[in-house]
Amino acid sequence: MLTSFNFTYCESINVLGFLQPFNILSSLIFFILAIWIWRDPSASFHRWGLLAISLGSVLWHATPISWTLILDISAIGLWLLLYLTNGCKKLKLPLLPILSLGIISLLICGILGQIFISWLPMMSGAFIPPVIITLILALQQKKLSWIYTALSMTLAIIARELDLTLCPWIPIGTHFLWHIGTGLSLIVPISILKNRYRS
Image 1 (cartoon, rainbow, N blue to C red):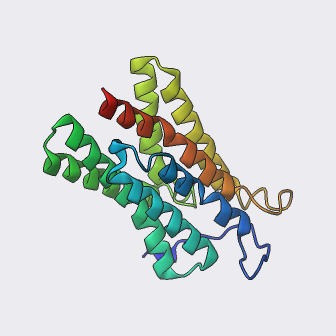
Image 2: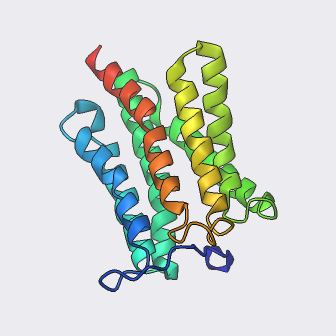
Image 3: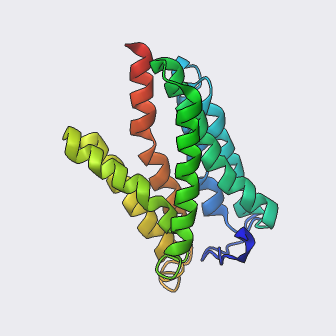
């Protein structure tokens, strides 16, 4: 069960009744990304996924209960599937097999998150495959953009896992950097899709 995981965060500052204002505000980076691509033809589907990620994260950090956690996690999968849908639409690729592969990948990531939970208690093991994929792309294509993406995601995972450890020295925690890092890591794949639609 998702609710059995210890998703506890360092930040506990109370601002207007919200206990995690920095985590809430940093969740808006996905809203900003959605606005950035809103009128672009490449964003016809996955802009809604970005909005869902932002909304899910805001609700989860504002009201940390079971259903907002499920919404937060589900929104990430929704964005991936909508992004793949946009890509298939442009490249005229078969949608069903690729979406099926996307769903299988999400399930594998979830399993890895549980396998590595002893070492990465915030379920960050689920995000190791995307880092590996971006590193492979960086080595294969020799492009700084993919190195930047892998670095952003890696630093985001580190910030996610060190949140409670660094709490005595950083009262607001470091989880908000997880949101910023993952948001920045989406710029390259979003830009690639934008360029594909313009070509």
